[in-house]
Length: 424
Ligand SMILES: *Cc1c(COP(=O)(O)O)cnc(C)c1O
Image (cartoon, rainbow, N blue to C red):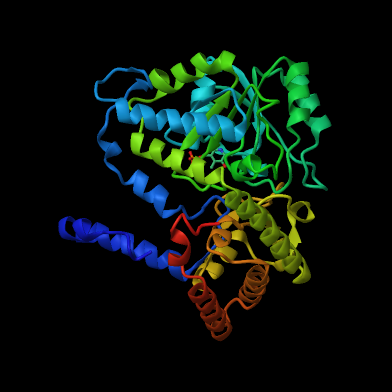
C-alpha cells in the first residue's frame, strides 16, 4: 500500500486522496478481524481501476444494446466461464452489483410479491435479504424464518423440515452471515423437495472455502446459488449467481433488464481476475491457512475462558458469547477498536440484547491470513483480545495492548502481500 498511484486524485481532489491514504494507513495499522472483509490483490485493484468503467454494455456477451462491446464481451465471457469452472456450475451470471442484488434477482426470477419464503433468522445468523422485515425481502414477500437449536447453537434439520412442511414456502434459503459451522446442503435439498420448494443457497461468506473443497459445494443440490465475490473469495466487491442451465434465461433476465441497468464492466473484469487467482494452488493453500488460523484462534480464546457459540468453528468465522464476561458486544467492539483490533458486535442466538448492543462478537481470519499472519500470530491476537476485554477502564494496560498490536502490524506490512504474484 501507499503506492496506489494517487497522483491525479491528489491534484484534482485532495480531500478524497486523503480519505484513500487514510484508509491505507488504517488497514496497515490495525488488525482486521471482520469476517466479511479481505484484502484484494493489486491485480484486482488495477482491473477495477481500468477504462472498462467507461463502457455501457446492457445485455450479455454477443447480445448487447450498445456497440463497441468486443473487449468487454471477452472480459465477461472469461469471468462467466471461470466462475462456472470454479463452482462446477452449469451457468453463471457475473453482473449482480452486490450480494444483496444477486439475492433480489433470484427472488424476481422465481417469486411473485406475497409468496412465502423461508430463510434463517437474521437474529440467528441469517442475512437481511433472507426475509428480514427491515429489508424489501421481508416486505414484498411473506417471510418465515428458522432458528438454531437453543442448546447446541446448531441448525436442527429436523426442525427446519417441520417448519418447511408447515409453512410450504415457494422458496427456501440456506446460508448465513454469522454461522460458524458447516451447512448440510443435501439435507436442505431433501427438505425443499419434500416441501415442494425451490432451494436457493447463499454462500456469500464461504465461497472461498467452497471452491477449494474446504466446505461442501451446494451447486449439485441447489436450484440456484448466490454469493458475493469480496469475502473469502477475495475478489472485488460484487455479486454472482450460479444456476442450472434450465434456469439460465430466467436468471439472466431477472438481473437485466429485471433489476439492473448497465453492468459494471470494470468490476466484472476484476471478478475474472480474482477467479483466475482462485484457480491457482496458492489459493487453496490460502484457504487452508484461514482454517488453521481459525483453529488457533478458537483454541486460544477457549483457553482464555471465552464461550463460543457452538463451541468452535468449521469455517473462517466464530461467534464469541460475551455474556459470561459481563461485557456487551458494543462495548467489546469499542474497546478492541481503541487498541487497533477491528471486529464487529454481533447478535448471538436468543440474544437478550437488541441489535445495536448485542451480546456477541464475530471474528474472522480471512484478512489477517491474506496479510501473512499464521497460527502464532492468531494466538497472540487472542491474548491481546482477552487482555483488552478484561481491563476495561485500565488505560495503562490498554495502551500496552495497542502498542503490541502496532508491533504485530509492522511485522506484517500489507505491501508485501499486495502483489498478486506473492499473495498466497
Ligand atoms: C454479505 C452477505 C450478503 C450481501 O452482500 P452485499 O454485497 O453486502 O450486498 C448476502 N448474503 C449473505 C449471507 C452475506 O453474508
